[in-house]
Amino acid sequence: MQFDRPSRSPWRRYIALGDSFTEGLSDPDPERPGEFRGWADRLAEHLAAAASGADVEYANLAIRGRLLAQVLAEQVPVALDAKPDLVSLVAGGNDLMRPGADPDELAAQLESAVVRFRAAGADVLLATTADTRNTPILRRLRGRIAVFDANLWSIAARHGAAVLDQWGAAWLQDFRLWDSDRIHLTDEGHRRMALAAAAALGLPGADGEDWRTPLPPQPPRELRAALAEEAAWVRGFVAPWVGRRLRGRSSGDGRAAKRPVPLALPRT
Image (tube, rainbow, N blue to C red):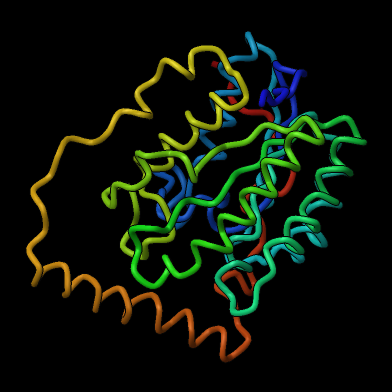
């Protein structure tokens, strides 16, 4: 089946919506200590490079820890008011990690936002969730993630959206591209993800880049080291995450969007 790519390239106003993935966690911004860059910031730079010297404005409304309902209620109206011609809408991953999550219902909620953006004349970039088959504990969520992703492809086909396919990205299965929390990409992971997004949008030159190339082979980990890493991950990530859930807290509580209004990027 062929999916229609968005047709308004080159885009002039791009707005990114979502959670920590789009905020860019684990990709430190060298120009802003304590802040993160991430694939969406990098994609905006690729959009600027493809704009032939014209101004490209970019806003990033994503905030870590946000659930899909929060993204729809808090970020979608702001983005619509800004009249973008391109949005990336990547949300639902935090919901899928919670007990009892319904991937079909989440997909239906996401589609409602896609419909609104398409009706407003904006092109939409969606993203599937990465395959968790090689991650202990998280692999238990693989079934509901697969259902959500299948729905997402159908949404894209119905409304002419582009899709950043994380599920099918074999290079993402390399643990060296993930931070120690196994949820967020490293700077190299974000660099590759931005190029994958550029390719999904059909930007010139993105298909020829090296983002699909596997990292050099690495010797297998010793069992003792692997077990130690698993224990450190449970202590450092799983336990704090469970603790926040029990207290009704989120890692994004009290945080604001890092780039709340569209601002022109430097011309390249």
